[in-house]
Length: 288
Ligand SMILES: C[S@@+](CC[C@H](N)C(=O)[O-])C[C@H]1O[C@@H](n2cnc3c(N)ncnc32)[C@H](O)[C@@H]1O
Image 1 (spheres, helix red, strand yellow):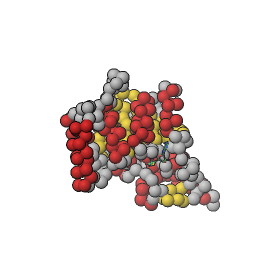
Image 2 (cartoon, rainbow, N blue to C red):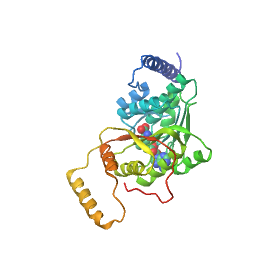
Image 3 (tube, rainbow, N blue to C red):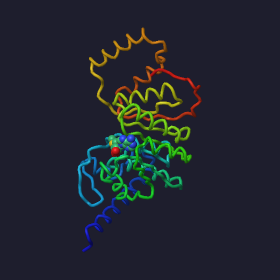
Image 4 (spheres, rainbow, N blue to C red):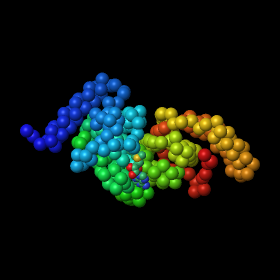
């Protein structure tokens, strides 16, 4: 009888083979819905995953299925083969991205690349994310950087690296999210896309508003429904807005921007497309 880890490997091979056949069939039939990797299905339903030593642990931090499918669709629509993400955790978004990038790369006869930056992959997640991608056979696609994104991203910029898609799901304060975007933008090709998770958080939402009001980015899609602000919060916000009108010297956002902001007010994730390089004047600033 073969040792347990050999059975595991054989099982992984069968799963990967069945997944690749299902994906090829869907591609040839031009089906638009994504087949997520079977290991993603497994974790989403059991909420458990494996550590490198075989121990099973609870997985409690990952994007919902709808966003997994979104990542597949966005990679495919943009024919992306090079991705960079901030925030790996148990590797759910990483596996979606690696799998989707690889599918496009195979169709294009090129190779796929995913960079995952996570400062706590070992310290907090015991390398569960890295192990998940190894189980799926994506070791060669993945580069993991275990460092704070604000320190790791500039190194990619210095090396002149380029990506087709960025996924931002790290530390959700305004400043961290904006710094992640600031560098991801410099790594993105024109026409490339950046996906933000957890747009329901006010800080992430404000960051997306800043980008749409100030940078040459367009909103491609907003999905999900984060909980809408309650009536009391809405009333407080409009009173604050009304008071600020008398105290400020700068302009309010344009009516077009306000309508745009409303369109993703209750979203949980958004996709933005980079339309062009940054050509703003040194003192440009639009309220958001
Ligand atoms: C919400 S989890 C990511 C979930 C993952 N994207 C998924 O859906 O499977 C956030 C991750 O960001 C990482 N993180 C937080 N702050 C970071 C920073 N400054 N730099 C790099 N990673 C960070 C955490 O270690 C954690 O793994």
